[in-house]
Image (cartoon, rainbow, N blue to C red; front, side, top):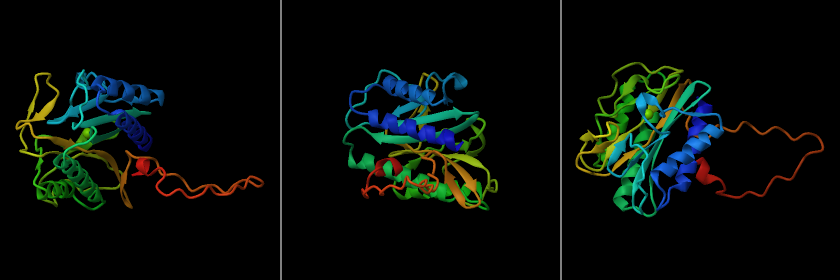
Amino acid sequence: MARAGELVYETLQLCGEALEPGISMLELDRIAEEHLRSKGGVPTSKGYKGFPAALCISPNSMVVHGIPNAYVAREGDVISLDLGVTLDGLVADSCVTLGVGEISPEAQRLLDVCQDALAAGIEQAQPGNRLSDISHAIQVVVEDAGFSVVRALVGHGVGRSYHEDPQIPNYGPPGRGPLLQEGMTLAIEPMITAGGPEVFVHDDAWSISSVDESLAAHFEHTVAITADGPRVLTKPLEVSAAKPPAPGQETEPPPATPGAGAALLR
Ligand code: MG
């Protein structure tokens, strides 16, 4: 799952780099599918209950499950890119919401709060906690900021299948639900709006948007619960300790370049 997760991360990075004013949603989907297949992955969403694409792309007031189409990104849009990849029979699932060019301060705050809520939820993914400790932590961050949790949509278990038990609401009192145990793998995903929590399903039977047309944000990681706490799988694999150089191959260490690679490792 960690290897599937790294491929999800890599693919979303690539799409994020391509997301500029003028690019179409179909083109982003093509970039994603081409890359992940080139690394031996399979787009989990493609064909899942009939969904036609690799990426779910949801612009602005659309919360989730947007079908990539001819829509062209415009300066100031916020667009969520949600991707599942199956690699060697195991699934990882992640989502980012990105601004196109310059976005409004309120839109930026919405994205920041959604990421903070995800981090707070992940922090609760500890052996011995209860499932709703995750839910509650997310709700507190979102609602303290004056935003709304979309209650009709939930996170989920993930592993051999895209969507496994348990469902993970992004609200609720702490201390309820299943005991979290080492070895569980969860897709934790706050879906929030800058307005009210109500959503509707479009005529395509997939896309879901906020009823009041307020901006939406969605961040997601696949997280494994380990004895040492949560391990986020949808980010770069940890580099193992460098081996000592073979005799005769010692080299001068490269000069330190502060900040190099920071964008990828954040
Ligand atoms: Mg998910």
